[in-house]
Length: 353
Ligand code: OGA
Ligand code: NI
Picture 1: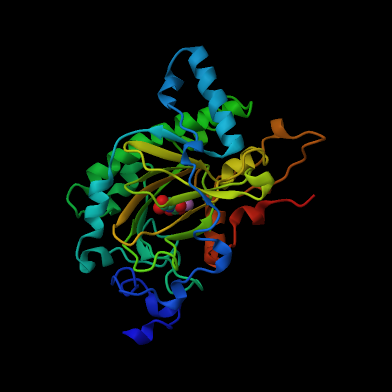
Picture 2: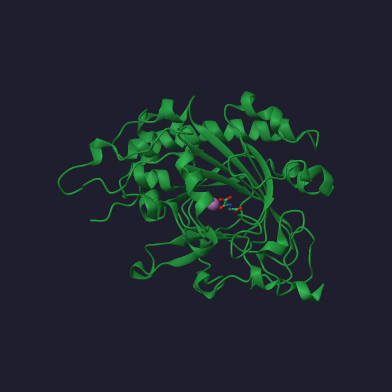
């Protein structure tokens, strides 16, 4: 066993990854480069993460205006806020507790597969591996995809399906508020994100790690989505506050508050805002004792529908700063690039001055 310590990524393909086997040590290819700063520069002043009760979006016009102002500030300063909903973690945990045979039915390295079970980011391929096991599946329209989801645990489809539906309604509400905060109006994207939008669920499991200082659950990255709504059972998510320390930034630990969802904006809102709102860089740290489960719901336009900078936001001082792109373009990027080494989709969209 010990000789696997120095083995390369290709030894740890799905079904055989160190995290699935709960190896008692962390192989070298899981050691994250020092530039990730896994522990340093962490600021534990987590109360600085804005919390917004978005149920007030359905209130009086005044109330709604107040919430939209809060969302505008949260997006500008942090690109991140929290809102309230209920819990769908048990059934996800149940899935990862199933015997390998059951989970391996969904095993795939094809990023285009509508349902896939795998490990790390691209297991055995990326230079650095991550201590993560995950199931990713499409979720909208539900009737088109749900029959492809796991049938075990028996309540998986029902419980995750309900969660997806609720979270999707919330995502449309929040996107309406975001487009309104940009002066584009509440319905700017409603049909493109509504009936025709994509919802991708990442059901993540981070087993206990024997050496959490060496490895990471996920490297610093931003999501391709417009917004991502995330539920976690334990802390571990950290987000990068770009504005701290006069622009040099700092990592902020996101506290776990029961029944609270984390919402962060992705690359496609950065494009939509022509750079006024920045997509949130986040990463996942590990712990030695407990299994961490997270449900990340990624919301975007349809598969081939391209997000571009709205002409309303372009003028002499503000030229178009991003190229247009779709979810499908992101998948193409994913195949060719190594997020574990810091490659970012948004960097490929930026138009240099
Ligand atoms: C993701 C992600 C965070 C988490 O799936 O893109 O960032 O806490 N997940 O699992
Ligand atoms: Ni992410």
